[in-house]
Length: 498
Image (cartoon, rainbow, N blue to C red; front, side, top):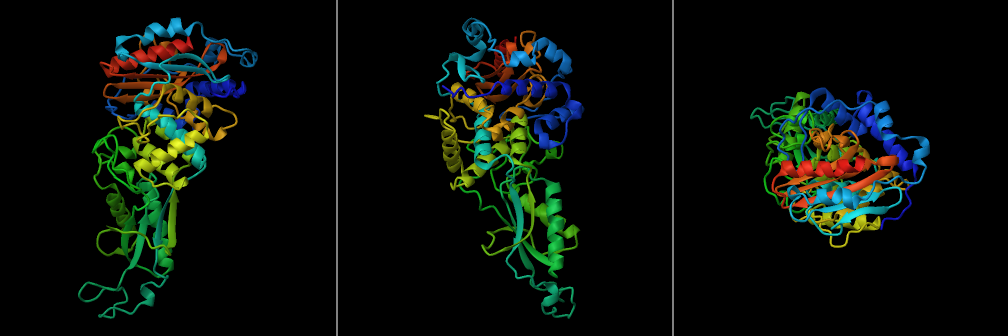
């Protein structure tokens, strides 16, 4: 049983945050508030979202979000009710039991519902059974990364050189005496070797590389260097690059250096998340882009970039940083971004001193969750994204993770809650909760989806009657069809809001 130490203020904050997300999206800021930016982007452009095995098809536009006043009126929430004894839903066995028996959810679905304010499990059906979570495993990824790294941690991508600062002006002229360094035979002088070192930022894009190239060119010119050989270093990660699922539009090869997540269709220029054709060598492609950007800034390059490990005594020429981990977590959860998920579990492994590989990440995440006193016995976290069909966790663990994220003693975990998509409005939930038996959850439920062939899951939070914050998790295996399974999950969770 989760420790009942969550203040009643948590529920009040959740209600207010939910109302703002549903009614004040137009006032949203940049990705520093990742969920709000995703909502604003959707409202403006209805861009596609993604995740494990999402087909990227454009979905039906949901109805406009209700105003704050309407949400408050329908919830009947007041300051007094938030500090009063919990007004919990009625007999959940009677309410949820028949819905859980729907054939659309397969033979033996699991369910867990927890009152976050008290830690009490209000409903459980096979809540301790290990099941394939699909992308709901990203909740575990998020909690572990935030706990281990902290919400303000940023992932660096650096450019270094081992050459001691003497550039072309300090070297002998070429055979022709041309100080530009070009010999009569075209070989010129020896170039300065620089290395682009991948730090594991799965959100690195062309704009970041452009800024990095500008800083690098400036630093090289200050050293009198005008010609370079470019190397790239991806040694931070170890083990297989390919996810066990194999080449797949839902994820790029897992490498410490990539730009635009290796997308070949330009989709990264608009937003991350969603399937797209992927490069087989995202690190090499990123290095090629970087070299091109250096040439745009007047530097000459010798040959094509090649892989190579940076010398240990290298000087740093330039660096660019990712957005904070809190922002990466929000983006990952909102869009079900598999590349960010695999990056975050490897960052967790690095922080723990373990190999940044699939195996090392599994050990690091499980150890971090155990530190948080979460029920991880028997859990298998074979990846961070949920694409691995051998992942196993329980509905009880998912609700425990969500409740821990709401713990006022763990403010660093709050982006887990703020990053969850809003039902019927944003991220991977933007086209759901449209059926008559689920519309009561639209705008009120925030949840992470999970979808693989025959596997459907949903885990999140909802403000129930009386203003109490509830955490829920529903997992289904061997479901006959994804669309009907998703509608059944939407109906189940909507009952908690009614």
